[in-house]
Image (tube, rainbow, N blue to C red; front, side, top):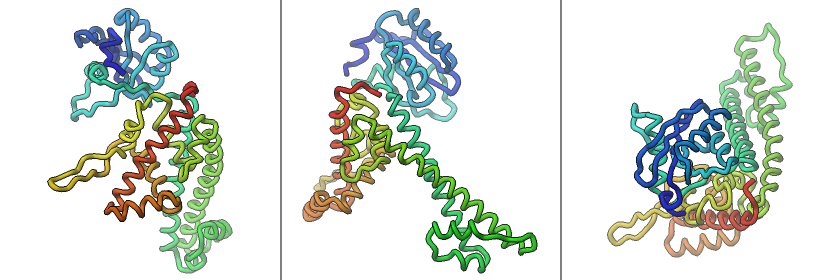
Length: 352
């Protein structure tokens, strides 16, 4: 994409908070700030912002917003539905005590003006439904794992006649036994309270397990409804959870300009780490870490049970590559392939 100054006369920078958004109009020809407005994050505020923009940025204009996936999501969606052009600006790193919303809105506009390539806000619709369900699933899974760990830890220190019935049993058996246990008011206080606590944790695990059982088929249904979903699920090592994260990070056709940029977004683009006689690259610790974990899952799965990947690993090992180097190369290759699949599957399909 060309520089914004080539296509627009005004850039409206936006710095959102939970309840308000600060907007500043900046002229692309001079970089000067022309007007400032603070609006509430509601429908009336969004309409006011568009009327204000007609006055202070009357001709070719573009909105450069921070937080289009959070506090500015409503404004970005409202602007897009009104036919306004919107680009996404990453949040600035600030020194403690230097927060100023008006200056941050100006910085957002000028940051967008200085970039050669712009990012459009992530789409909502089907992608947002997948994201919401994925976030919920992750929270349920973390809570369930934490509850299971609590249960196991409590069993270790439980009174012996309780512990003896539960030790060395699989989780399902432990939950069944705990559910069937009873106590009386005359029982020792440690036994009675420990059993009450075990049953409370077991009930929590059962509830969370039921939630997961309801979420997983719903997530699969959303993935298969996406134009790129079936093709992603057909790839070795890609299940619904991985496919969901890949789609969430990619968002829609054209948002990420090419497969190299997608690899960079995932934090799997190679970083130079050469020195003297040694030429090598190292792992990238930046990028979208959730997407990076998804690619890591695919790579590890393929290295365990995918014949072509195992053959590739053996060949690269003979060439002197370490396991980490091979995994890094695989993750980058997988990122590029999944990007091509998503772009090809949605090239003629409007964003959901």
